[in-house]
Image 1 (cartoon, rainbow, N blue to C red):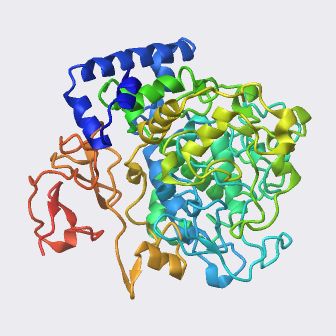
Image 2 (tube, helix red, strand yellow):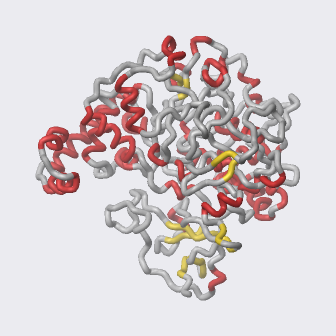
Amino acid sequence: MMETRRTKIGLSCGAIVACLVSSPNYATDRAELSQQLQRSIELQSGGQGLNAFQMPAKDDLAGIPQDPANPITREKVTLGRFLYHDTATGTEGTDPDRVSTWSCASCHHVKAGFKAGVPQGIGDGGVGFGADGSERLLVDGLDATAPAGDSLLPDLQPIASPTILNVAFQDVMLWNGSFGNAPGSVNGSVASVDGAGPPPIKANTFGLSGIETQVLAGTNVHRLRFDRWSVLQSNSEYQYLYQQAFPDGDTGYIPDNGTAVSAEALGAAKAIAAYERIVLSNLAPFQRWLSGSRDAMSVQQLEGANLFFGKAGCAGCHSGPALSSRLGASADEMFFAIGFNDFDVEHPHIHGVVDDATKKGRGGFTKNPADNYKFKIPQLYNLTDTTVFGHGASFSSVREVIEYKNAGVAQNPDAVDHLSDKFVPLGLSEHEIDDLVVFIEEGLHDQWLDRYVPHSVPSDQCFPVADLQSALDLGCITGSNPVNHAVQYCESASSDPDGDGWGWENEASCLVVAANGDDNGDQQNDPQTDQPSNRHPACESAASDSDGDGWGWENSRSCKVVQ
């Protein structure tokens, strides 16, 4: 209905929007599209209805999927959020001049939707950042083909860095699903499961879910340290936070099999995993629509959503709240061969080689030929925060991926004989592709992900990277003076007892974001303009503003520093 109207009116986009808003059929069209979408979702939900695709609120810790061996607590999340971002943890590199210049967030940061911002993420051995991570480069003189342990070997992977966004809805981690061996895991019958990851860690022998296992393995792979004189022991704030997160000192089971994992390192990994689990895109328009805000999505987004859950068949593979795979999915529902290319090793910003096991995806891990060229279904939220798509970064936009799937012709000739029977031409028109792109790019975009990023870290270092060029790029230094990061969003509205829109968490002021993403009622959902009202007093003392962002805390309420 709406497509016909768009194709027949010869007006500019702005004029069309104005026309539609004033049209007496606009509300009817929206209501009809919403009803149609609800019916389509119910058919795809396995009897769960809208709940099958709805995320819990970030404050609903009990509602977030979690490993029974690592219950989520606020204290763990607070500790993990700092450790995840703090470059002071990057101490096990090959060059003393680069120590403490990278973190978990170097390759999974908010500016790129918690991906790397470049096709091949670089931890130790990277320099520069730019505005969004897209300008990170390999340090001159390092060699991606050097043998393990060589001082010239940087921390690079032969595959694109996946996002941590919405990983709570994934049973196993990595593109091949090799991390995770909790009871009932899809890796339970894989003979090679215990050998996944770095040998000193033996991460899959801890019996943990994928997120916890990946973080644990990552402490070694990414040259991080959380024990034996690390910042976790030397910094008094971290000591306090660790005691709060693990008050009885028990961080969990460590197998007696020669693994080189201490109780402190396991605790740090579990805290980081707890933090990663709460990083949810639950303020995206589609999520708000699922929660009952039927005006959260535009007409075109609704049309695209109906295609996603209908004609285009996207929900046949992309299911569950993250639109990755449903909770409890089988391996056959989680991994598919759709013929994406691997890294282009001829590209000047791709370093090293892509080994055969990586090329074979799931099959390279399970050693089962039937799994060759299968890769895990990625989640679909906040894709436009980056230009890196696919395990080999072979696409640069959502539209390119949709057009590829619409054509149904594989990129990778080696995968042709292994393609999923679901990889077939979709038969979408150009207008339908337009609508589907808008739904994925806009309807699935949560524009307030900064709420998951700390204002500063206990070490006071620049983050997510801290080499000199990156520090300049990020504005951490101007000359020799540190400057502040962006405004931090509050984790909980209860942090704002006086109701002026500013709260206080983790020793820093924070901005409260309303559940519908619109703080000032202007219906614009714009964090640049959605500022709290002026119902706040001036601070009596500038010392009340410990983080230097212009907002302090006095007498159990926020205050504005007056220069």
